[in-house]
Image (cartoon, rainbow over all chains, first blue to last red):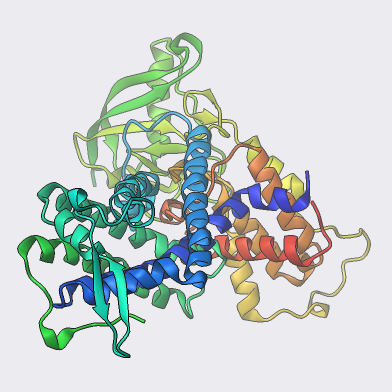
Length: 249
Length: 256
């Protein structure tokens, strides 16, 4: 077997793949959240729709998005393979199993939490990504309409009103509940995953590990919380006050 | 002064012989002295079983002073029992309440098959050591120890990893049955010392390959190993091994 394949399929190599793809997805979440928060602007979706248009037309973003799909799939498939291999390595279950002191619940349930996120991604991408990229616009019956915006330089920009689609989805209680549950799953996944990614990379030292762990915990609470805030605010019909208007990129 | 005694109920995993593929057997024990070690309590039970012409419970023990790594029991769901940084032989009955039911199981992992009752086969650990957990020294006169300089901090760090007694509690505690803490303790102990640095690149690849071959699971940084290790080996060693493995594969000529 080629040494590089052997490296990537070794126990440490597989964890390295999980770590690097995980860190990429951690960075991606921040970018995604930045775009999403514009949904809370009190501007009838103008900033968000123009941003969504840019994201689907910009060639650099398009190129990066293929990397993103690949890394999500790699992270998910590798994770399930590791879970399966680990199951094969364990013997009979202990009759009296006690969680060892200092061990978080999240750390021993990463596959379950990851599966929740994967199912959510299916629903989420069907809801917005597929609609934005592959369905016919405009389609009045399905609530997909086009809107025209006058830009600062006076030109007119026509954009898909993805904001309208979001508005409809987040008025449905079940969708809001699915989003909140998924974000709780994401929070637990990150609670362990963030610092764990650095440990798998071989970065553990008393000089910086406490800092990484602290950042990981703050990140794993703040990011999912802000994601979940959007469906909640839509469901309640609330928006940011005007002074908080936020533009990403 | 009269010794304090307790009554306990022992739920012990019996496997092999008439117990076949295994089941729990319950033994009530009366007047167990709290100054007894956990293994001495088993000696008392086995005396009773022998006097009743029953098969005694098979369990492994050797030094009974916490340094050999032979004892291999999971007590109430914790390898080596509830006391932190302690082997089973150094655990005393005073750690248990009067009237307690104590569940005792063997270490569980595919790479540690049960031989009988609480005895497991840990030769997979030997195979990992044989793959590279040593230094090659030519025979001859022992040279002066001071001719190989080593910083005190470095030798202490290596010693912390070297305290691993290879008992396998890390594997038993790990939800993935991974042997990363054991293997990394050896890799980091030898790789930190000047004598071991010489073969460090070859060693880490050989030991990790062997560990994977033995059928141990993959580390997901749960850190149950660190919590249950009777020698309190740090998971920092796992990071050190990850680093050493990557730099050996990507940065040295070695292809183990």
